[in-house]
Length: 414
Image 1 (cartoon, rainbow, N blue to C red):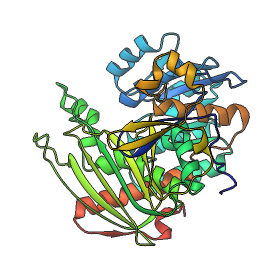
Image 2: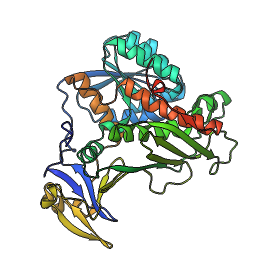
Image 3: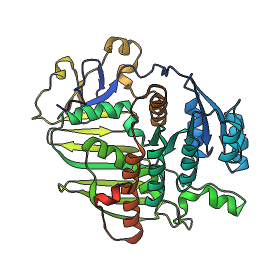
Image 4: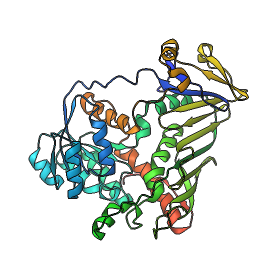
């Protein structure tokens, strides 16, 4: 058993899923509002798609006050003023910092290729930084951000959300304690129905809004979708790929774009194991999920839910004694639920139990806890660089049509 990853106990929630001896994994205390023990004042840099998502989550933290936000787009500033009442809007980060020197932290939600300067400027102003993932669009920018973070002496968290996700943390404890034994195969997918295109009558504004479709600055699906998953699988297995291959095409949105809307990649590890990853903007089937297949079981993760499928010859680990059993098709599902009677009375037992908040909420919560209580950052700038570097390599393989080798120097900040 890994000493820093204790085996789940009887207060762990595991809801049965379909197909195999399935257990859905979830702690039983997640609905409680967080207590930071300190008042934090934050500023938001960028109020586009991800900035709006952050605004929605910030309202869930009683001890966090959004004092100000900034964006170079006037229409987005006006829209944010309706969502962030009481906070002041600014056209630049510089003017926001000048007007609010008392800010404790900045949340960076600009387009990926515009992360470098806001991060460096915020760190120079002695602010704690939460930077959305991927960390940047080039390795040079990643290293510039990492260098600034290492010398600033402030909390810096990269927004790879899986590391803060309670379901994933619990699932990882199963994997690290040997529940599925030797991992023999990895798979992940990210499927959504979304063109990534935002129309505008102003050509310059349309180009800026659709930066994800600009091959000059975009990391495409590998960066904007895959990087989160690449990081999760490293976190679970403690290994990075040494070689990547990728192919893709425009299959769903034939509107003249140059960035593939459907991508397949194979990431090969030093031990010979592989990750098969795929993503599309043209279909939602099975959404976003990861699979870790081992000789004694499989963990399936879907961000708000997780399942453990045990092999028929898997040894018992002790917690099964508390399990309820339920038939699913031709297989028996093992169900372990804290306060099962209470959940049943609330009608939740059959519906299943998932996380009450999106992954972003838990990323922000862990960031605020690191500031207020000094807890370890769940994903440092260095860790963010490594996950982003893998995405950069996958995108390079996709763009060139040639496999890309990865060595240790590609994964360092030097």
